[in-house]
Length: 184
Ligand SMILES: O=P(O)(O)OC[C@H]1O[C@H](OP(=O)(O)OP(=O)(O)O)[C@H](O)[C@@H]1O
Ligand code: HPA
Ligand SMILES: [Mg+2]
Image 1 (cartoon, protein in one colour):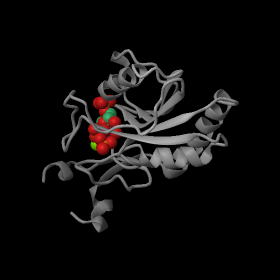
Image 2: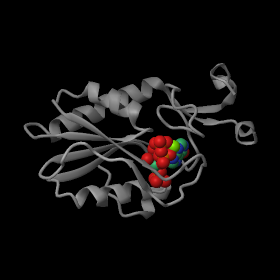
Image 3: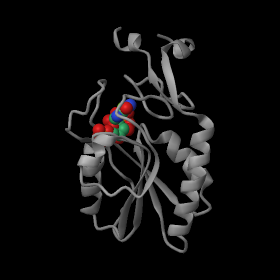
């Protein structure tokens, strides 16, 4: 399937571009207030968080720093393997720093609970989480998520950084794919 077929692949839009933009503005205002006068390092989780990191960071007034980690637990499928691998580590030393992890989605919560534990072991001053989407399975995991864009139902979603087999990350909204896409 090539890029011009992206529209045919969609089933429904769950969160529009306008809704994302408005919510990010609210979250950025909260983050600005919470970290006023404090150091802040945003940690984007590649690749899914690229869009939310880029848009959230531009809404902030805070002179936050940005770093990136790549971890993978999904591969090409639609369910988490539960095995988290570090594909790329942070460049920054986070000891004594205020870290805000930026994610596209918390689904099973496995990736994030592993990541929070991993980053906490490095001696930061604080670790908080900002995610564009949270799904209900994450309620079963002991995770404190401070900034949440949208709570969505337990459906596989794409767009705004979220992929299915590496495609559809570049949709500007969040939606679901038509069943025929999974049947190929
Ligand atoms: O809560 P969980 O069930 O663990 O799922 C959430 C994680 O899965 C996705 O990453 P993925 O491993 O697909 O890598 P990607 O960001 O490169 O797509 C997503 O970006 C989150 O990091
Ligand atoms: O619903 C999802 N879509 C894309 N990637 C994901 N990774 C976890 N859940 C999802
Ligand atoms: Mg993925």
